[in-house]
Image (cartoon, rainbow, N blue to C red; front, top):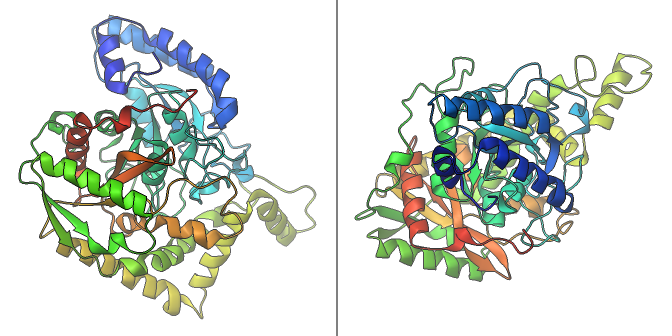
Length: 483
């Protein structure tokens, strides 16, 4: 059962080959047995899962149907879940139980999903390796000595290890797509505003976006269908009709114009990954796609702009965690200033503190124009590059990451080296565009991803291309040894 995709589970439940309760018990037992190796879960919700599974079986018995009805998933631990710990991977929120469900959680629960638990993550989604979590690093099931990517590494490791078929995740600068690439999964960051951020604890509000992590494009289409849609509670949610993503998977790629930016193939890219990307291009050409070289001239400025904007927003968003209203509070504070200092110093880890300090500096009176304002101008230039490119092509293709997953601890002493690994992913967040990573092969036994970017609200186009690619390749079917 654990090898089934979401689509296969939906068919099995519809054909009464097994019940949601049976499937849930199998997966919960598998998590208990295998997750100690991975550390992919922060909280397990066995009672809730079995209760939801029984309810889903009852709904099916009464004639209801639906691709997600009875499907087991997990939520990244920054989606608020009523009465269940929502920690953001931080000591600061270790004792926080949300009083309500995030919109994504409530929408998926209404569709009949079964929540197995909350997955591990970089603290407050700040990281590219899932090593900054207060609950310990997550390990990559393809090689337990390597990182699974971040910040959604718990969701990625759990799905890759076949502990469950799919999970929710979030992407601020590549935190869905990079873990997908490192663990041989398909991961989709939707257009900014496509998925509600209400109840999703913020890192950088103008960049964060929730999305699905699964093994196939078909599964991502199913999960995104349940997540997407307008939410009046979220002022950044866009009132745009949600298409039937699954129905659009089988469109022909004949004549599809694919742009390949020349800037993607510079000195920083592992040449073995470059070869795998070229192989992916050839596969898509066989399916009728037309390849065109394009340019994204401002891509070189994206990393410095991102690492001003994101920390600036983080310093503002995280100011609410002060030891007064909720979260960690220090013991016996001498006065209010001592309460603030020690609560935040004890509650936040090193990476979070680093980004808060960078952000506060960039927003300070003497430096706002020099840093934050300039970064926002670069953001506009990055967006303009994409708009110009999409006048010539339908999608943009390139590597998801410049290198395969690195060893645990390898970049801990050099945060900037880890930041540079986001070079291909952060531009989509700066521009608000949808992006998808899909499996494209292996380097030294570690998975590699190819990234697709599309114009606003064209998630269906990305899923269509990825699905057709996966019908003609088998990278996405490979399973890590021992899982």
